[in-house]
Image (cartoon, rainbow, N blue to C red; front, side, top):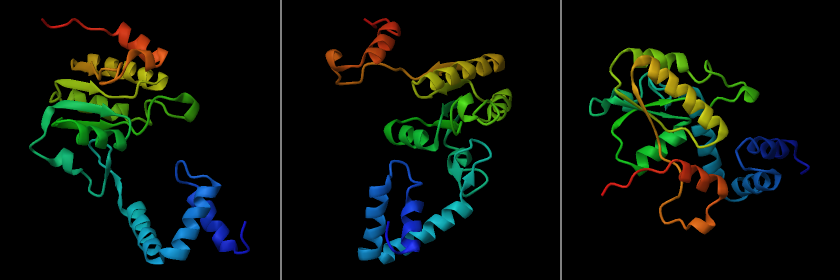
Length: 200
């Protein structure tokens, strides 16, 4: 540690970021102090503004400065399609990679009792109420293919069934351009078990 208590506090504060250990935090702190104090001030200002002003959309729960986010407020989105994702990062990935024009519901996690994440924390009561409105016709479950993600998907399918809404799941398995000999066993077994008919 350095002889400066404030520098040590800065290094420790930077460690709250994912994937940032002691050495990386130290490099970041030294960089902004040695070479980019203006950038550090701008970062501190934007972090302060973001933590004060960004909350969650009351409709889909994604990050938003407004009560209703831009995607939920847009009349050009298809309200009959609702894609369920675990995080705002997953929502952004789908927006950037696909032509999906429906709406979203962000769980802000996945079922994980050990982490204290149950149905209430995921907003499943809000989701059930939204499905009960009768506007949604298809609910696309886009949770991650983990044990927790699969358990969450199973619970979501039950909520959709109770509301009379068709539930679909993103396909999982062999990636485009992948070679079977290099695919891990779990992924290959899942893909094999979920095989589909070929259209002729």
